[in-house]
Every structure is written in C-alpha cells, then in structure tokens.
Image (cartoon, rainbow, N blue to C red):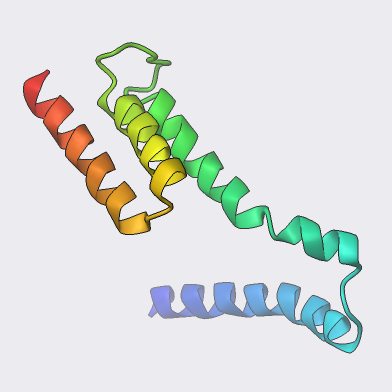
Length: 104
C-alpha cells in the first residue's frame, strides 16, 4: 500500500507544478522567439542521451576504432544525411553496430 501512496503523491506533485503553468499559457500564446526555440528541445534531449553512450561506452572516453557504437553512429548519421530515410538509417546503423561487435 505504501507504493500506491508514493505513486499517488508523486502524481499529485507533478500535476501541482505543471497545471498552473499550463493554465497561464492557455490564455495567451508563447512569444515567437520562445516558440521557435522549443522546436530544438527534442533534438537537444536526444543528443544529451545518445552522445555520452556513444563516446563513453565503458565509462571512459573511447574514440578508437574499436568503439562499435561510435562507428555505427557515424555511419547512421551519414546514411540519414544522404537518404533522409529513418528506417534505412536504423537498419544500417544496427547492422554496422552488430557486425562490428561480432568481428572485433
């Protein structure tokens, strides 16, 4: 029962901190500059999650050719840039990653 109270309390705390801001912003629009800046939040968050995992797979900086995640990320970025195809980018990136780990 303690877990239920804990989850309910955290939900209430989350709602209490977000609802006033949402109500305030619902009556007026965001400034154009802020609205434009918010478009970059998903890319920034995704980069903040992925870059440390790619550059420090074992907890230490690894920029060598043995870093399969780094090589696969570079290949995936190149495929994405050239083709703009999300599925192909994922398939090629995972294939390079798994093949590199299998052979080295």
